[in-house]
Length: 201
Image (cartoon, rainbow, N blue to C red):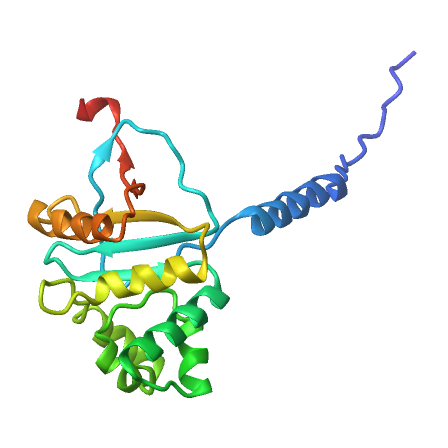
């Protein structure tokens, strides 16, 4: 007697569970990721072995480019507005509500305070182009950097200061920034570095 032929059935794999897991993972990564702030200049931080993480909130970041230009950023919009108002009072400048709104939405600032009104009136694309060529004055004759830090501290007493400088930035520039902070009795700050790999040792 011949063998009975069993008909082959086409295999069907239910992908519903797999697509559910994919959507859940995608949602998780979207909700837990943090956006990188747009910075006016590219900075290659020096390498170090320190693994101490900078907190994500209440941070005043000081960005120093290789040529010595200084830029700053705050992570809270209410702090940004309070600092701009304080600087306006200190230097006798009145900012319009529209200028204040544009300033609070900016990720980084760094122009001399006398040019700030003109700068904020420009379209965003033009502001991005101009910003990288400016910088907050930090010299002995006009140290606006100290005024910004002082007013930022007054706006938020819990601020942590973090300095992010390029590896090729001259030491004299960094020393000038640190001396300005010491003049304000700001002796605790973090230096942002990249983690040194095994091959770099």
